Amino acid sequence: MVTSKNFTEQQIVGKIAVLTAKASGFDVKDLTNVPGSVPARKLMEQHKADVMFDYTGTVWLSYLGGEEGIPDPQKQWQAVADADRKNGITWGKPGELNNTYAIAYSADAAKKLGDAKTLSDVGKLPAKDRTFCVDAEFNSRADGFKPLLAHYQMDLGKADGVPASNVSVMDTGAIYEATARGTCNFGEVFATDGRIKSLNLTVLEDDKKYFPSYEIAPLYNAEFIKKYPQLEKNYEKITEKMNNETFQELNLKVDVDGQDPSDVAYDWMVKEGFISEK
Image (cartoon, rainbow, N blue to C red; front, side):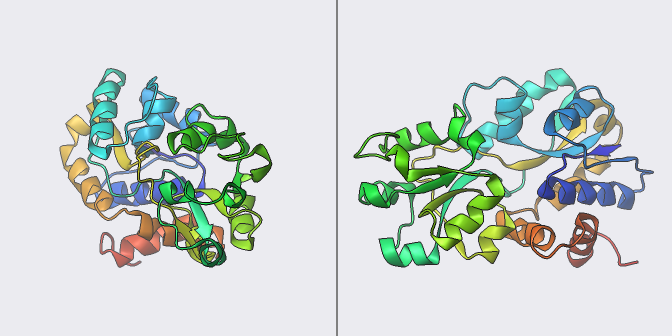
């Protein structure tokens, strides 16, 4: 049994997981596209699903009680893998895909403000140019916007930091267009979102390592994968091909081009040689 959450990237990787299991000879029950993150996680914890892809930082902070994320990817993976053993969950090796929060800006903003490459560079700009678009959750999270600014010595609400009037709170989907149009100079994004590519946005480097690592990895029911260890090797080959650039393109096909996640997953698996075309 394979499960996934129900946002675009999870719909794609869920179908990739299903196709991988089928190609490995399993009769698969498809439990992907579960509404909400918690129900999908519960299927794994209750051993009602055997495989899913999830993100190291998400599981660490949201389900395992981690008080703060670990920026080092390997240390974050090890911490979450060790902690999840008590839940009967085995973590496979992670991929390069890191669906973390990020801050992006447009080509027009770059021309206006200079070629900023890092979040530290934003702190060198005049306060009037430090305008941000963020969503309500990121704006209020204990590991979100306000502590991010403080980490980079740009305190929220201070005239020499980021004045409150410089911040626009909006729906997540609207941030990408607003950043591209210049409503704000900098927008909160997810690093693997296809709209980064389609709107010609540039992601700033988190040079002081504020954001936790959110690398993707396959998770298994420990008893199941102990019984079928060869399946882990097959998923490892898949995960090695997962990176931000690839998934910006795959997510774009769904979110912008309107393709079905199942078709996007199938086409990618064929292109990479993991399955044969029907």
